[in-house]
View 1 (cartoon, rainbow, N blue to C red):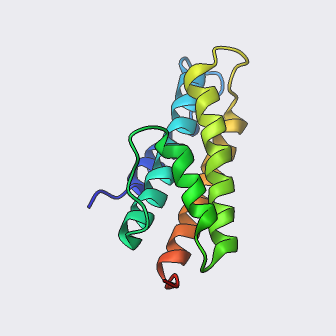
View 2 (view 1 turned 90 degrees about the vertical axis):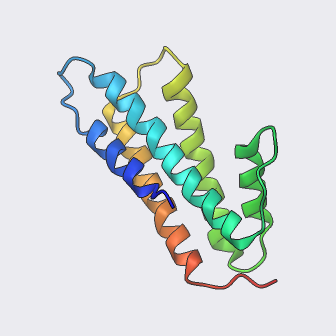
Length: 132
């Protein structure tokens, strides 16, 4: 199975680009985008492994957040994960679609921190059993 953490590592490399270098903002935007997709897919794999979620045809991202919020066991951790993913998606949308304002290196680094928190929550949740 593909390891989404490798996408997060790539995002970290992109976020380290020098602020004065050519293409720096493009790298930071790509870092924020990849950080979101790494965290999203890690959470998606977790839910699919639980057999609690099948991706819908439309708006799978929002539906995944709702699914996390509705899970019972360890609900505080699930809600935290949903909140982090929601923040990351907002940053990813800015990075991928908004020409203005510019996306700065600190926004990319914040996205990376959030993605790492999401990975940590998924890892913790995988070690616990969610009640039926």
